[in-house]
Image (cartoon, rainbow, N blue to C red; front, side, top):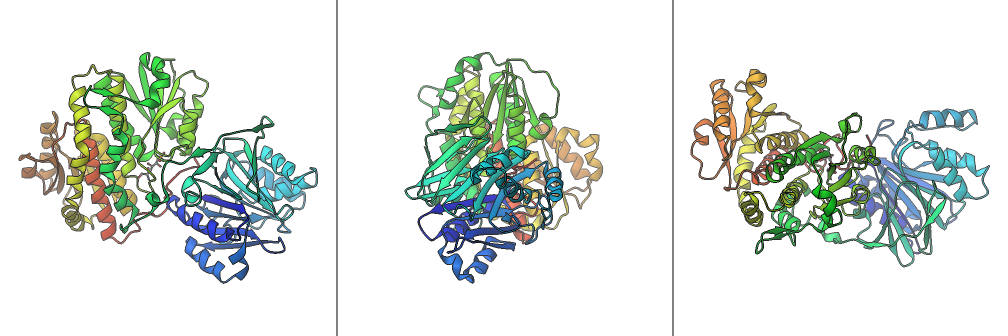
Length: 613
Ligand code: M6R
């Protein structure tokens, strides 16, 4: 969703730095972009464009002043309040353009504030919720002794979620940044400060960062100094910097045409990174350093509730099967957006596990906040190091998949399922008879994903064959059931083809009615104790002239007798098959989208990180 970037420092490259940062945040999804800077006479200059950051860059190269700017703020906007337009694009400003603001999130009480300010004579030009902020700060500058106090007082009036940057011509050597339920990270370098929605936008310049927490206001100075104040508790905060553990190159496309393809090709390394130092084959152990601090509490866990959204939710469903089978602990997986509004009883023996690639998904954060005072253990399975979910959970296991930029999650799903497998093994305390075989299989999986990637051409051919169908059904049983869901989600989000997922056993309870020659089914029919049941479902589909693409295990001979086309995964225990099945489904969705000419990395209407409800 929206991305914000700010720069303050001694160089005159503010506009370039912010434009590059906004380009690095493009993966989050947006529909317009804009920036504001102080010109040589410290007047605020604003430039906005609908569409890509490149359009903004082109427009700015024609503005000579932009070539030498210091303090600059910018934003990529994903429309919520008001259509994508130049007027609604950020930055927004007060009437005399002495105060300008970029904002991520939603100001829930914007209507009330707008009416209040209109009564006081303020005029609004946009439909956005954000525009109340510069006017409100302007209003309070008449009451407060300093500009900083006016910013702080205004923040106290805002309800909802925000990450906000404020720049003023009244204080050209200062930028203000504040957050509530929307991420902000400060990058620190000698004589310069960078600030952004996520570290991808600043890693090019520095690896030393400070993450802001809710209700914190950072005052950033041109000489590279800064302060952080908790404005709720009126306390100044002294927080150590953290060092980012990845490089700018990891965020680059390299020789791949799309991030989605690059990230699928990272599957082998993703599994290696997620298991590195955690599996000990010699002595049959799993070591999860991130859970050591809560080892005693984990012994008394009698229920696990997994909360997540989208692909992370489907990874959670795989986790449910794994933890129940390996560790014998009952698990429920809930959509975070539903969980937070439910009134269900909790005992202290419950562990809440939040799964999130970005660590910034608003619904998942809200789910964790809901149980904040319940006395339950809150764990995270998170990819983005230092993200909100990683910081607000009691403990957790990082996915270590590196930055994922395509909107469609691919390697993150693989990392999440790998980590959930490790957690299930860890919770089983070595007692499950499956412990050793699965531990060994985790070490063998990278090579098996390489074998799948080597089949990319065959998967592409199949995608070309099926690209024109309007509907798809995905079916599976047990471990194949979450895979059916994840496969359907991947296909619909990048190819815009209608795809539904069902447990194969549900076919006769309704979905079978849809089947005819125009409605193909992708059946997860890999080797497992329930394969025969799935074969019966495939028989029923075939009898109704439904075409079937099956995903089967190498060496299997019965599936191809029923399927129109078969894609094979290397043999693997059913518990680890989801990693391999998902990669086949991801490649299939990618090639269907490509064949239909879609922007695979940035599907329409979607954002990478869903930071508003
Ligand atoms: O960052 P998260 O894992 O919390 O994101 C959750 C979903 O928004 C995400 O998985 C989404 O469904 C992906 N676009 C799916 O590919």
